[in-house]
Image 1 (cartoon, one colour):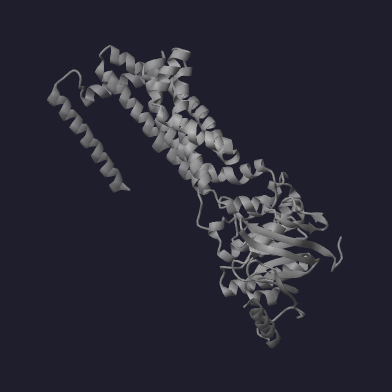
Image 2 (cartoon, each protein chain N blue to C red):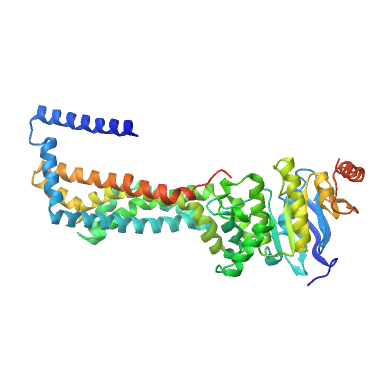
Length: 251
Length: 252
């Protein structure tokens, strides 16, 4: 059991190119336990590539990833430690919400047990969808589908959740509602979050620390600690000032 | 619905009338009237030996389709996992199976296996395999790579990803291949039985043809058409509605 503040994720000198195009250049940072770190960068700078490398979905050309000290250089080594929420919900359309949430258990070769069923219900309850377990994805709204996707990522009880612009494409009300809920879940589960976004407002609301990326070849431009108490109000002067500072850094 | 049924009944009636008119006009033993054909059909469906032949043909269709679908599915899927197989299947196996006429296969199989079950079954298998190869190809091309990437967050097992994510995405394509290949399989089995079998509906058709009993040729043809319609509209439409639609991608 790690203590608050101990390092959960270490990203060491990650560089990556697509053929001759250098995308990521010597990216290093850490994420501590129970910390929310936002990666903020302009569109197309390689944020998603970085997250995919961290998630073990693709190898990097240089550098390594340690998750709880385990080298995740070979894609998927630290699979049980992470959960991923993608920009799109990526639900299997022929499965109900509950069956989608149970998918990770089946993919690791477990037979459905009573405990797994309880965990699925717990995850659905956590995202306020306990009554929608029997619904198919096409019967749910965009926000509800993303909640199912969040429940699927939570069901294995990961130590760190990787979120790739998970709220893009949702309307403002749903987006803010989900931001509140994810913060609540983060607190309950006492896990770490690595959140990729291009939205400074989202970064200020979510993060303990914001890593601002430059344009290609992408390097870390600056790291900003957000020393604001939670719950954060988007309407305060302090919030607006930090958001403005991030916008200037992004420009 | 009632209007649709009424129009269908009218079309059938019109067909029978045209048939009757041609038969009456030609007044030839080579063109039986609808009534003579129905009588021949009645003799066929009331004879137990006819059902035996229908059963044999059905068995050959099902066995040939099962073999052809298994071979086609394995070849189609192999193109995703092995580059060598992708080249081999695309450049050699598929064009060969697709371009060689079924009758050539039937003749080759007669030479190899003589008048036996094997000849029509293999003729069917060689005719339906390309349907499965091409449909699985199409399915794999349309495969949502986002879903397979999502699955690989949790497992590195290709088998589990195939089983839980890829195969369900391919079910509609496999069903479409089964549906169209079953129709072809019936036509091929009749051909195969005419050339290379001593039983089955094709064999009975060739016996009727050899003895110039033209109304029986028409009777067997009608029976054949009825079986095909039953398979397509009865069985496949039901399966599609009841089981397959949920596997088809929905707007999400």
